[in-house]
Every structure is written in C-alpha cells, then in structure tokens.
Image (cartoon, rainbow, N blue to C red; front, side, top):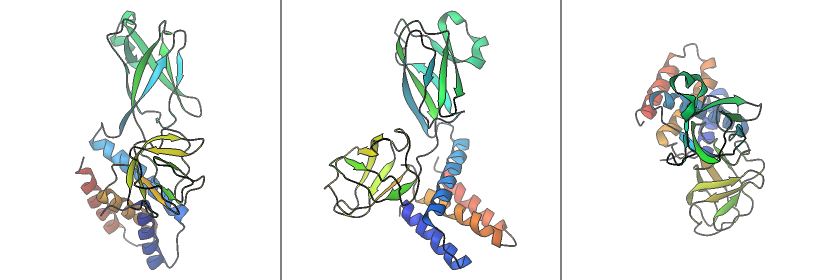
Length: 269
C-alpha cells in the first residue's frame, strides 16, 4: 500500500523509539527523509538519464542576453535549449558555448549558464536581434515531501501553511507543480489530486480536478508522483540505516538490505 510522508515519519519514529529508547522529532525525520529522497533521485538518474526531465520557456528579447531561470534548476541540470518553432525565420540553433567549435556562428546562438547566488542565469550570445520563445529542458530535484494543516480551500485550490508539520515551505512557484496532494482528513478524505500551479507568495496550490467537497478541519500530504510503495520502503530504511548503523558493530547487514531495496526501486526504471 502507498505510504504518505506522515506514515513514513511514524514508521521511523517507532523504530528509533523502540531501538534507541528515544523519540525523534517530525522536523528532523522529515529533513532526513527528504535528503534520502534527493539521493534516491540521483541514483535513478544514473540508470535512466531522462528521468525527472522538465522544461520551461524563455521569452528571448532583442537586445537582451541574460535571462533568469527557475530557482529549482540545479547548476548542471540543463540538457538542451530549443527554439519553440524551428520554422520561424528568426530561429537559430542553440548550442552550449563549450561546443561552439562544432558549428558556424552564422546560424547559431551559443548559450552558457552561471549562478548569481540565487538562481541560474542563461546567457545567449551573440545578443539576440529578434524576439522568439525557446524551451529550456532540464532535470531537477524532486518535490520535497510535506504535510500539515492547510488554510482556506476552494473547489480547486488549497492554501498551504507557512510552517508545515513536516517539510519546508515551498519558496518558488515551480517547486510542487506535478506533485500529488492527498486529503487525509475532513469531508474530502481520500481525494488525491495533482498540483498544476502554485503561488509562492500566497501559498495557494491549484489542483487539476475539483475536490469532491470543500473539506474543513482537514490535513493534506504532498509527495512526488513517482514515489510508490517500493520507493517509500527504501526511504524509510535509508533513514533508519543512517541512524542505527552507528549503534551497530557491523553495518554490513544494513548496507546489504539498502542495496536490495534500492535495486527494487531501480528495476522499475
């Protein structure tokens, strides 16, 4: 059965409490689970390079070379830059600057990426002389898991809390888009939807299908759409392994089981 973040936290808490004689806070476990989630996505990308591939459009403006990119794009995440419509007379080939020796400049734009301390900046050279829209393809970190008590809701929206029970507040509009959100209490209990848009300022998440009813006194859970029961099992074990292996004389069994569980996840890709 699919486990949601709160269930993963509870499983870790129970194991740590029973084994180490102490409890672990939701915040600490949540950070460790989300760290394990990022590590798992990296392992998946090793066997499936196209996993977690996303795109964003950039409106190229004549006379402008630099364009800010979404904050969730990692420094080495961009895979290619393509014109939205290659038939347009203003469209050119977009080639990474490091590959410039393979193409003639007369039919090519060269792009490079740098980090300005907050997000990536796409630089296009020579400076564009006409406007067009290009698509930037990239891989990104998975949506961080989160759960808590929401604010107001409408038929197709939900206001996420400033301080969730587990996980950090999403700071950028792109972060939770495409993730699953489930209602785990209230009138719409059991509703699972996909987030199609998010406003980082108002914290309003819009879902793809209306709730069966506008629930009150409810709770919600968010996790990436690819996290299934095998992945959940691996995440729980990975966190437990990190916490408990330091209390073992021999960590071989823990590492062997981690590899076995990781193998089950990777086999699905």
